[in-house]
Image (cartoon, one colour):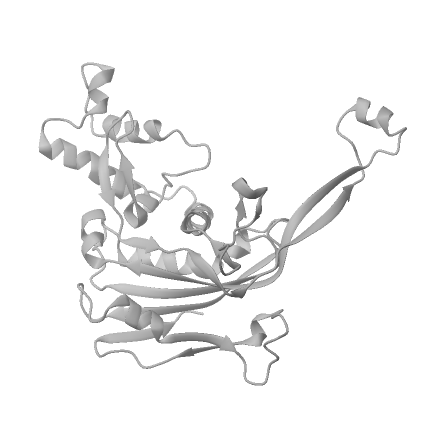
Length: 297
């Protein structure tokens, strides 16, 4: 396995959506997620990590060490059993799968095997104690919810499908064969998310410089391979990375995040709703000693 990263990182990720739904809320009829107090849009960390996983699947395909643990429709216990089988650990009964082997070295090998073979476990960690036990590990890469820079206004749009589902539906419409539907969109929203990468936790999972490069590439390109009618036009606009000189870090994360200011451009009418990234300025202030800034986008 490659050498784990030796530096702490934080990053600011800025992306936007035009005429789409970046992250629907199933408890609200799939409306775009909103903070009810501010009416600012939200995108969950789970949604962002799903897109990273999907990009890695496309980019690395079947390359060893880059399988995805949290696949769509995956059976997690089957993923755990792969480690038991690969290491030749054969429990006497099915009940013994529920606990890690008494031999601590073998128990560590199970978790290490999962980290070595699954990219998203190396990056995000996993609790692998569900029925077939493969331990648990805390991931070095963590993401917070993305929040829109300004309040957003969801629109409900009526749509018509020029077909019906069943013959009974066709008879009821006397052959007109139309189906009405609705979709929810945001005309425009610019979102900001914060991310954290711990070098110390990377030592435990084996998250390497190669993995880090893949993460940056995923954040830069993942919307290009996640197109759908529901999501409209989504694009990564800025990826601002703060690299610390040491593994423990040289400044608090909030100080670095506060250095990045996203505001309306001078002269723009702030009373009018923003409709493109060109309506905003992104500026980076001074950062403490021991931290360098790199703009990946």
